[in-house]
Length: 215
Image 1 (cartoon, rainbow, N blue to C red):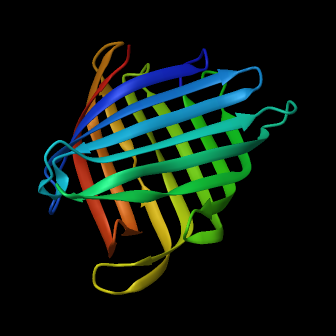
Image 2: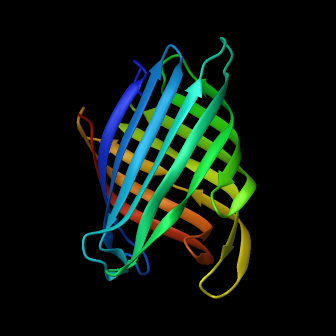
Image 3: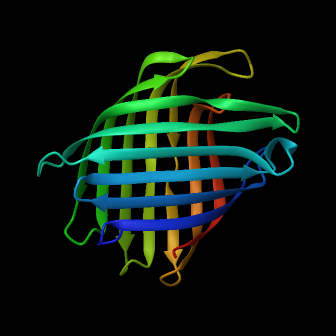
């Protein structure tokens, strides 16, 4: 996040790891205003599952509400999208709706930022009464030449994996590490850490090579 409370960027990642080797693009926006803050991102995968063109589209949008000078704020969030299993089969990602609270801390220079969120989660046609705990961080070093940011999610969701095993909880984290070459371009990596995510019941580590552009 910038000192002015506004940041947006576009990212392109080459996904590495077993059964990957495809391109992902991300558009992110974060804005603080007098009433709270808004965050959204849109992810698109290209060529996974041997699909031609866009193989996944997913987005999240969240809004927090400043009701006092407290660092605690109520929040709402929506997640949704679709994935293409093959060129002829597209499957919707279950819509998820969340409401909860968040606590945000930062130092005066906004070079250390951390947010902790606790949410009630409704997953349409799946889990009527679930939860999600999320941590979000940003650390900026060496006069902002180096950025370390990301999130970690833990939530309840009933799934059946490709091997038939049933699972009830999902963990997903995507820490990012960037070297900012100038005010507009950065090179780096994102490391996806997951368990019981994407029909896989194993703990997976999936790194990327990334390029990020700030307008």
